[in-house]
Amino acid sequence: MATKQLSGEQIAAWAEALVPGSVAKQDGFICYLKPGQLRETMAALRTSPDADFAYLVNLCGVDYWDHLEVVYHVHSLVKNQIGIIKVEVPDREKPSVQSVTPVWYGAWMQECEAYDMFGIKFEDHPDLKRILLWDGFPGWPLRKDFLSMPGGLQPGLNEFAGVAPKPEPPVRVVE
Image (cartoon, rainbow, N blue to C red; front, side):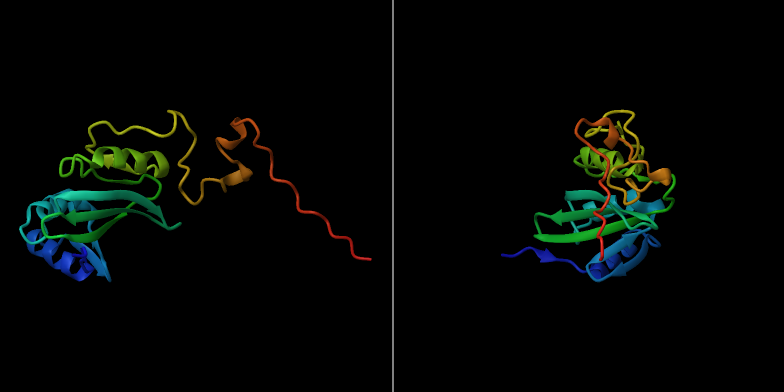
């Protein structure tokens, strides 16, 4: 039996019934939650008999230039249904959302990865730290603006052996 992909409308209806005012919008297969009620709504969806989202499949960050998002793929193993929930990070300069580690302990490392790559801080995370890069690494490498910093700086890359400056394009001579 194939896994049922839930619509954003269905997830939004469950979320609104469980935590009124928690849904920011829904679009196709995606339900967007309000950042301030993220953890409460996710906990309610996990324990709800209808949603039964007992398993967090994936948590990742996304950069859309003008804002960041955190994407949650949640699954009900008993009902064999999967849903996509997103939250828009309110402030790109100081990105922060609630941690869902108290809801799904498996979010622990995935939140650390989103922090390491995008700089998104997860409030009340038990031990938020870089896990792929070293402490002091300059910047957040999966942000779209990482290699286009002011002054043409490319943080981190010049420190590695074998990384040469980008060559100039060949000049074409027309006679």
